[in-house]
Image (cartoon, rainbow, N blue to C red; front, side, top):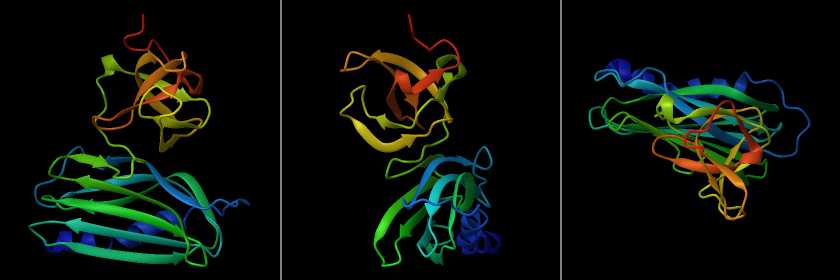
Length: 228
C-alpha cells in the first residue's frame, strides 16, 4: 500500500516533466493543449500495485502562459486523492510527447491539463481518464482515445493527409472537437457515402467509439474492410 501511495503522490511531478523537456516553441500565437492518444503501460492492471497509463500530448504554451495540471484518484482501497501543480511556461511546444500517471488497482485516475493566459483567462483544456476496473482509457471531452483496437481482419491503416475533424456521422455538419493531424495513422474500418454524396471512411477512435472523416483527408494503406 505504501508503495502505491508514493507513486500516487509524485504523479503530477512526473507529468510536468513531459512539458518541461519539450523544445522551445516557435513563434506562434495560439495557446493550446490536447491529448490525442492514451494506452496502458502494461497489458492489464496489477491487482496489487495497479498500473500506469501513458498519455500522448500536442501542445503550444507561449512564454508567460500558465500550465495547470491536476490529477485525481478514486480508490476504495487507498482512499481518494487529489493533487495539482501550476507552471509558468518559458515557451514550449511539441507533439508526440508523453506523460504517465498511476492508476489504483481498484479504481480510476483522472488527469487534466489547462492552459491559462497571463491574465488568468482559460484558453484550452484536455483530460483523460483511466479505469483499472473496466480496463478502459478515454477522455470525457472527446479528444483522446482508448486502447481496444478492432481485429486485424476488420481494419486497415490509414495515413491522414490533412488536418481534419472527426465527425459523428458522415456529414459535413457533424464535426466533433477531436482533430486528426496530418501525418498520423489511424485504423479505417469501413466506408460509406456521406450526406454530401462523397465517400467517407469510418475510423477507429478508441474502445467502442468510431467516427467518420472525408475520404479525401485520409489515405488507406490497403483494401478497406467491407469495400466492394
